[in-house]
Each structure stands twice: as structure tokens, then as C-alpha cells.
Length: 170
Image 1: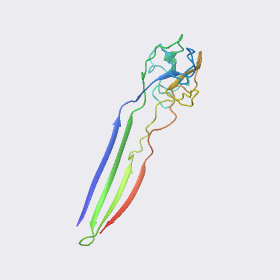
Image 2: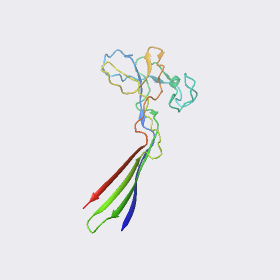
Image 3: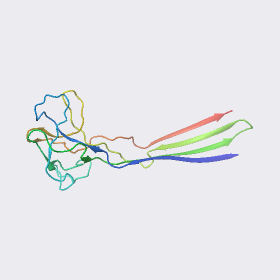
Image 4: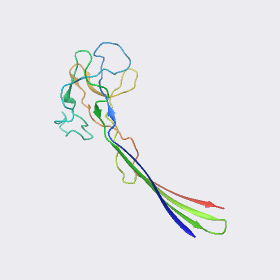
């Protein structure tokens, strides 16, 4: 007697929020955590980026020109920017074969990220004195726009992977 089964797992979510921050201590609070924010002066999803890329792409997730250096503490809120969404589908095909009265053989084929969809991370380029990052540094100094602000540098999931297996039960 032979039997085949299918299974799948899907993971989907919308945009992950993130925070624009300053890459320097503008308010002179001498904190080891870089968490001061710029001023929001426009719509970060309108226009084009300083590097010429359209907004919403990997090389320009948002328009950094919509933000400006603050006087002391900026008015940009926490998690006001939206990162890319996430889509992943894993699928498996399992085939069972009965060999004898108590012996059976199972073959499995598992495909992870079956559509090979790239899932990009949020833009993060902040490195504070502690070496940790917590957001996308828009300005590296007073009036000095970060050249890589709004750019995505990594993914959060792997590419398509195939896995084959068999199991003998007795």
C-alpha cells in the first residue's frame, strides 16, 4: 500500500516599522546609545532619493531629504518609517511505501522559500560608540547627510533550499 501527503507553511507579514536616528550626539547628552532623532519636514515616501533611485527600492527605501538635522532633539517619532514586507512559503511532499508486514519506507522532499522570494531587512546603518546599531542614521554630523541613508544592505531569510530524506521503519 502506498500513500502520498503534502504539507506547507506560509509566513507573511506587512512592513516592519523602524526609526530614523542621528549618527551623532546632537543634544550633547553623551549617551553611548545613538537614539536622537531628526526633524520630519516632509513625506519620506514622495520624490526621489539623493542617489537618484526611486523611493521604495532596495537602494532607496525612503527619501532622507524629508528629514533634517534638529535644533536639539528632533520631532521624528519612533518607528515612523516602514520597512519591506515578508513573504515565505515552505512546501513538502511525502511518499510512504509499505514494504512488508512491519516494514515501511518514507521518502520526503522539502522546499524552503519555494518561490525564492528575497526578504529584505530594514535599513540600518547606525553604529554608536558601543558598536551597536538601532536605526537608520540619516545625518552623520550637523548638516552632513549619510550617503547610505535609506539603503538596505541585507536580507532576513535565506534563498530557496531543497532537502531530501528517507526513513526506514521496522
